[in-house]
Image (cartoon, one colour):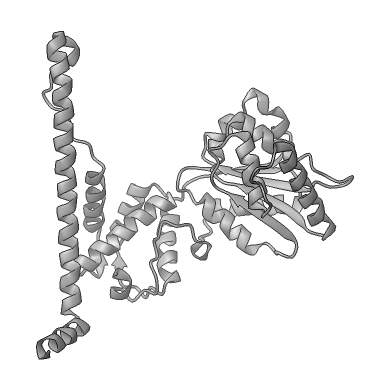
Amino acid sequence: MYETYYGLSAKPFQLRPDPHFFFGSKGHKRAMAYLEYGLSQGEGFIVITGEVGAGKTTLVRNLLNKIPTDQIVAAHIVNTSLDPEDTLRMVVSAFGLPFEGASKAELLNRLEQFLRGVDRQGKRALLVIDEAQNLNARTVEELRMLSNFQTDDRSLLQTFLLGQPEFRATLHSPGMQQLRQRVIASYHLGPMDAQETRAYVEHRLATVGWKGDPAFDDGAYAAVYAYSGGIPRKTNTLMDRVLLMGYLEELHAFTEADINTVVRDISEEFELPDAIGEPDPAALPGELRTEHRMGDRRAASVEVLDERMMRLEKSIVSVLSILKKIVATPQGAAAQHMDNQE
């Protein structure tokens, strides 16, 4: 949509993690260095934590794209809201092994034989666990037990754990002492600063062929940082909407006011109506409390319906604006001319 309008080869601010857009901020470079160091050690656990949207998944996918497949066999697991046995099945499946109908003993035997086969080929096995904050203590212990697969002189499986900051609470709980002893490196990935956020935006634009159109002044970049706090995913969400607005409004230069307009639109979409002047339900008699609760439900239903209608109206307006632009193009005019001839 807006890519063609601004002469871009693709969407620069998609939410899907893509190593093609990897940006090496100070924090990301250090985190990557920890991952590469851990990879060179060939054993133990590497732990990387970071806020939601900080770029942990993009980081690990960038690493997986760089590792030599003739030396390392890697498995990447994202769905971690599982019990220990289901997690074991997920690990076995991620390495391409059959798992359906197998007992835990059979799963462990298959995995061990696979890891020994990888070792005989002169390769190493790497397990990457994303969203590690969803793992409970029993599941983490199950993963630790997998690190016991080893030969006389080396480990058969190395594990990277990536998660949100709360995973550190799990890691430092009393029962995790044995796992902590096997963590050879740990790093927390923080947000980018204002200068890095600006460089990040320009890097993603340049990756898809940006030649300065659209332009952003200093105030616009400051507003982007003020909203995103240096979190890549929040920056992507905002910038995608900014470029969409620019396309609809035919803008080629953005100021602080333009960015703040989009920020307000995003905020309003997730804003709940305030209850003003409402009586305290606890102070009402029993029958009136019941009636008040029913009234609240009816009012909430009406408010939800109103909100949906407003969003639908905004969507229709946006679609109409897009259709107008399509019809206004030479292709649209030519198609309309052919229709008239018929």
